[in-house]
Length: 621
Image 1 (tube, rainbow, N blue to C red):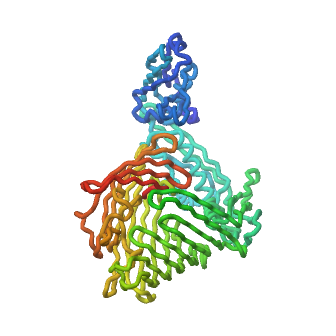
Image 2: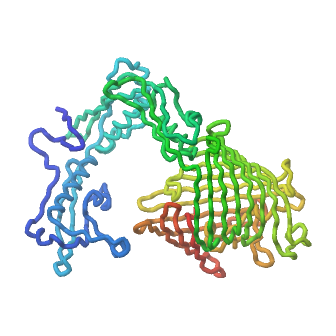
């Protein structure tokens, strides 16, 4: 006879004699003697499926080390007989909801130090045979849905649910699959739908067959959309973001897409889409109320910081949006650091130019760069057009026009005119960049990939003092393994010139070494040098890095890393036997604006170089 039961309670055993779900043995007299003692250590044996930390998370049991007690002010957990019994029950219930109905959890023994008033707890677990999913069935109870439509819906359901034959049974899977099935029907227009489940348990085969019973009502359509809350932004702009129109079949996905398109404009603090669903009437026209709260038209951001390379730095970013009630934004940006004595930039940004996927920016700027390899002043204009294929894939095509003044010593024979102390030249060309990014989270990625490809074509048809092409690729991979975050990076590029002298301006050459590069060398210290020892830069570059990060406590994490790379004077020249290597370790403090990073690195197989220490904000990659 099959058994029907509510799985949150896991009442699957009702026939004949009761099945004991767990055993709890505790010596009452001995236990009371330890009440009030500090829990010094917790040992769990027999837990093959779940780690000790996973099990303790379900309880109030915990132990803290010296650093946690000292810096995080964690109070020691005090032993209590009654609370201990509740924690054993919580651990047992957790196992049961994870498909282990026959689990036995008990306190095996207690080790007491009466002098120090501390106790060590030993917990024994016998997981026993778990329950697995058996056959998964679906019953759509509707006469109005065609068989073809049912087949389409069933195909979507089977594609998205996690309940699979042979998978270990979990309460969470069943209830989440019910929600997934409900969303599939809602996104197909069946706003009013009921999803139930029946479970047939076989104790002989340790299998649970599940049937999802689905009862959809009449198909629904979008009704009128009411917009409230907009003050400076035109309603017509907001309505253009709607991913649906009145009379279309209802779908939550279209509401999600609308919400995303509104937030992508960076004009709204709140964009709440509320379908006016009335379960009592099950009406098939669903009006939508869109509540808007705009961001302030004026916004100012000020930043201060320090790094070992750029030393003291500060910036100011003023922005203003919706001057004409549209989506345009203006930005005035100013920055100062040792590497950028001054940088002023004015940007006019126009999202959704011609279509929702295209954006444009007009950006005049003035900038001074004082790098180890050059000292230049640049003013000019950038005109980038961006196209967004999806949330993860973007393409940018940018025209630039620049005037550069290079400050250098008179005897620097690298200059075209060695008699001139101030070397002036103009640049004009196209910069094309492609980026794929599915890394998460964005500020401190722990999983996913990032790939960037760039091609810069200077001069040629666009007119410039020099003709050259620069190509580069930067790929990054992030992987989470238990409590370890692994990050890897491969970057390389080359630049080649069609001029007779094959001259490439100093700011467009490749450099290597520094806090975001090969960390065993100071900033740009790898590669070709001038006679005075300053970095000359090169025409080919290759860098590889591997970093493993591990959380310590609070927001602090440790890291170990290995870097390799170099720069070469010739184009398309990548001799792997000439790579320079370095290894090191570091600490990071996670913050909302990025990790505060301290790295210590030493060159490998190079006794002439000293240890490098870097302090910066943001991960190296």
